[in-house]
Image (cartoon, rainbow, N blue to C red; front, side, top):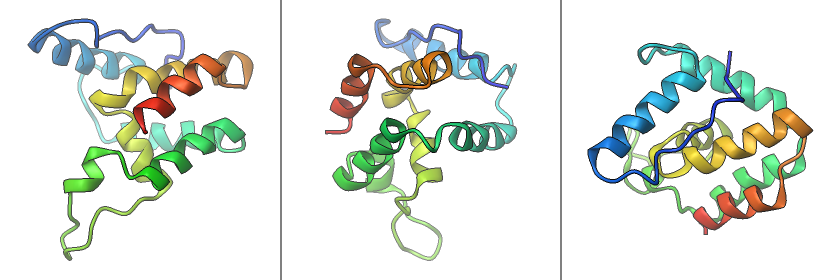
Length: 129
């Protein structure tokens, strides 16, 4: 389903190689060879698995309150309104280049200890500030 044990690391790479590594990392954690819509189903499973964790939900709430996620600032739905700030949409954005490396660390923590370490919680929330 999701490879929590895989170490995601692409932001320390410069240039196009960083984007390539990011895409490879996303496919690897979802155990895919190419992108498929099943990723959205797997993201729903991840959300449902951890939705009762206070820090996990605090991350989503911080994203909603701060409106920092760039996709939300620019993307409009077909009927003209802005992209809705709801948990499923925020989760999709957490798998974007900007947030994935830090968010994956939180998922690893949750999988291993059912809690997010303070260091990883601060890392993701700082990105959202």
